[in-house]
Image (cartoon, rainbow, N blue to C red; front, side, top):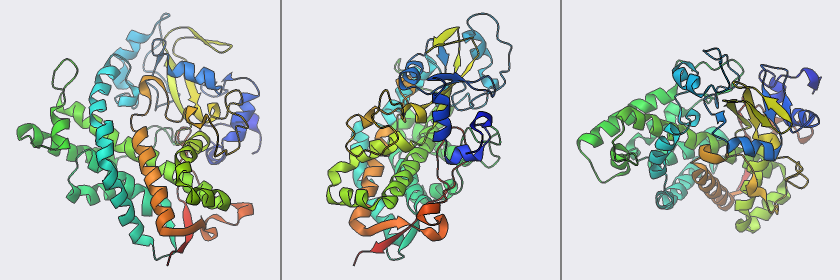
Length: 423
C-alpha cells in the first residue's frame, strides 16, 4: 500500500478500500498514537477505545461525526466545556443526536428509547419477513442482483419507515428519496452537507405526519411519537421530534444495508462457510457478530477532550481531537484471538465495539441484527448458492470492491452477486 508513513486516512482512497494494514502500522507504535495530520490522537487498542467511549465527563461528542475540525473559538483554560456549549451551533453536524452531550443527550435519548422498544421490534418481525420475500421476488428469476439497491436499501428503508409508523402508501416514496449514494460524515471532500440532502425532504414528511397527529391523535406509532414526553412530563417542540425521527430513519438504514452487504460478500467468497450456515441457521447470529467485528459499518468516530486527560501512555490537552478507531480495536490481539481471522465459533465476538459503547451506543443495533438475520434466512431459503459476479468485481485473484471515500464509514459502493435459481 505504498508508504504508510505518509498515508493520510482523511484523504487516501486506498485507505478507504483497505485500512487494516495502516491500522496495524499505527498499532506497531502503540495502542494510542498521535497522527501526523490535524493534531489528532488515535486509539487503536480495545481497552483504550472503550475507556473513552465511557468517559462523558472528560470527552465531548460534539465532533463525533465532524472529525478533525477548526474550532470556532480559541480554547481558554483547563476546562472548555462551557465554550463548547456556547459555540455548538457553529460546529458542523453538532445538532445531531449523536453529537449531543449529557444532560441534553440523556433527555433526547429518553424519547428515542420509547420509539424502538423490544415490544415494537417483535411486532415488526412479521413485516420484515414479508418484505424480505417480496424483495427477493423482484430478482429471484434473474440469477443475479446488486445487494444494496436491489435488496438491502429497499428492505432497510421500508422497515424503519414501518417501525416509525410511516403509512405504507408512502414507503415507495421514502425508498426513492434514499435511492443513491449515501451522504456520509467523514467524506474526503469535506463536511459540507449536500444541497439535495434527502433527509431534509424526509423531515418534511415527518413534520406533516406529526403535526396531524398532535391535532388529531390516532391509535398508531406516529401518534405515540407526536405525543411522547420527556421524563419530566413536558412535551418537546415538534422540531425536536422531527429531528429525532429523521435521525432514527437514517441510522436505521446505513448500518443495516452495510451489515447485509458485508455478510453476503463474506459468504459469496467462502462457499464452505455459506454451506455451513445453510445447513445450520442457528449459527447466523454469531456469524453476524463476527462480521460486525471484522467489517463493521463504522470504522471510527471522534471525541473532543474537554480537560487535560491521559489516554494510555499519552497526555493530551483540552480541545484535542481523539479518533476512536473501532475497526482497529476490534482486531486488538489483547482482546481477540487470531484477530484478523474470521472465526464462526468465536466465543467473544459480541464484545466488538462496532455499535459503540456508553451513552452513545447505537440504539438501532437490535433492528440491524434482526433485519440481517431475516435477510440471510430468506435468501438461503429462496436462492441457491450465491457467488461474486466477476463481470463487475474481477476474478478471485484480482477482486475489485469500491468503498465510500470516508475516514469514518466502511461502505461498499456496490456488490454484484450471481446465484443459482432454485427450481
